[in-house]
Length: 344
Length: 100
Image (tube, rainbow over all chains, first blue to last red; front, side, top):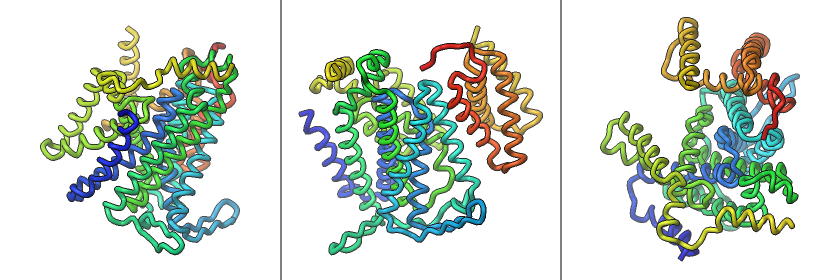
């Protein structure tokens, strides 16, 4: 039963464009899906290693800008008259570059800041996000600043011999985002159920014990940061090519908060948590909008969030698992034990 | 008692900021970020550190705004914080303590 659940959810979601014809709701599904990918990447850091990145939107925004700039091309004059001209590349290469550049930024931030952890890591990530936002706002030659990057081409896939496909319609974007969500789910699932994932959980639970059995703390934390940043970059790239316009507001702190809400309410440290939390908090504003005034809409959002955190402090997914006794998720202490045994 | 006195101090800072800056519902966002940053900079749990940290941050921002670019005013402060945390993770004036 437990093994079948993700497939049932995937099939149910894949059928959505077949019966849902309302473009506004489809649009809500696509943007929610993009934020679910970002929330899943945050969950890898927050849920499995216990490090809170409050600047996660930086990786999202870097992915969006990289992907947009690679596929639009740019012409920038750096210090000393050195000029960089970039011809437009195919859009799928922009997507790949977004993942690589975001992953690299994750590596740098992780490498620099995992010597300090806890509150210090939080402040380094916030500072990083703020610096990146100011660069996007002020480097007008490259990013157009507040004028925004416009007419970004839609995501396109060209296979030799099979022709060229552009993800222009909402339906095709829906399946693209669903595919990326499923792919990220599999990658994160494989990672956290491996030796590496057990080492990460062990670090979160008891760092000194983990170190004493020979787990290289910094290495695993940096690895988690790289994978997490890369997935966030992929989400940013999808966002840029779906909206076709991005401005420095993609770096707003609000988006980080949205991701954190999705992860915490859904259940941090569970694979399905960000998806459940994301669907709920992506759709509360949309549903509330149909019957409530704009002010009430966000008050409802806040009330619902407080209610969930108050009633289900562990998050929705762990609570459901407990009620229905759906197969035993390898408990955290058990996973930590397994790592200890591995290491011995 | 502790929340009451921090609230009172923050209110005093706000009252002093009001006549100098514009007042808006969002004015607290950047101020609380900077307050957090200054405390980290000076060292957690050090009153003198927070005072000196405030001077250093403000000075770095204004120099950055004057000599580099006014658009990067806030970025200077954040870059300074990252730099301090890299070389002295406990902050500049913290009593020696174990972190992490």
